[in-house]
Image 1 (cartoon, rainbow, N blue to C red):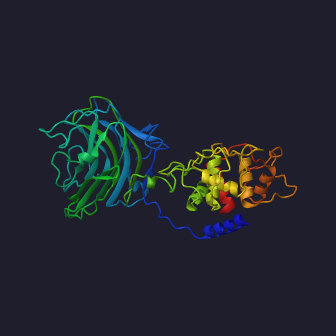
Image 2 (image 1 turned 180 degrees about the horizontal axis):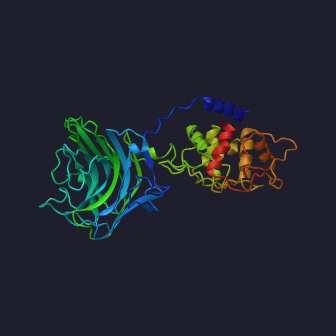
Image 3 (image 1 turned 60 degrees about the vertical axis):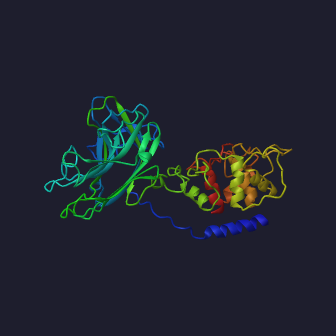
Length: 458
């Protein structure tokens, strides 16, 4: 009776409307899992990377004796979008071990493009006749002056990043070199780094344009006195996100590779937690058929994730252990742990001991080693048959008389529980679309667990 009352309270709570979440404002969320064909049709040099920061990624290769690694644009017009005046970007970048920049050399990385003419690249500045702007990222061997004579050279295994900017006050023969704070933006070769940028174009004719930068969420650059547009050039906007990789001035002495992942840009700051490249709360369930069930499980507090303390993953394809099952049900049914209870001899070192004891006190579990049943086996995977027994006891379900929905459970000790779950429409079967089998001996995945509980309690 107590379990039934608790269950009714829980169901009433679940019936209340959930808090709304803000829609994802990112214009592009690209993790390169489906390839690197992201940019305009003339883009080149984008190579697939098997292991990026998260899953697959993108790489570019600058051959020894050459300058270019690759180049392409993501034009807003090509996607039927208005060209913005303000934009944030985020990508992860990695300079592999062995990456080498000759002293007094540097190169370009992806950034903002306003190339309405053939200026603002190749040492050609903006002119009244051919106006433009660009604000790519740069990489440099030497710092803090980025290659100016009289300053020490940086070590071989570090690279400083910054902005390479064509603006109205930049030198006549090249873009301006604005390195970021070297205490923040000097990157070791080998690790991945989260790089963010922000541009807000100036009021035409006024020096109030903004560029900002962050590395791993730490501010590294901030300038708000830039003129990208003359007084009559209000039509100039951010035409593209320019994915450009170039080594110069001299050709690269060695074959260099630069790796990228998790590219995103939009009207708001993206951040380094990949919030804009997956549907919260978990990053690993977007392609799961159980995503809706998993989100429900999280919203109700029944699951917290599978990778503490971050807990931004759910691991939908991993099997559910008996310990995890105890935690799911104890939270779902708001079960309390009895004082001084120690029913089982094998759960003392389990993080789920309190949940296990609560399940035993509620007679939802009886143990895993009948007839003694002094063990719970918390690390053992839960089978679909055992899952049926757990839920039947937890929900006080009664098996229907003379029911034989599935063809593969006649020899199972859990047949009555399975039939009870089927009658309550908590299970549909395991072999859609026929669904005449239940697969009682198969392990339950965390995704399937979410679906079972959502149907039972949602």
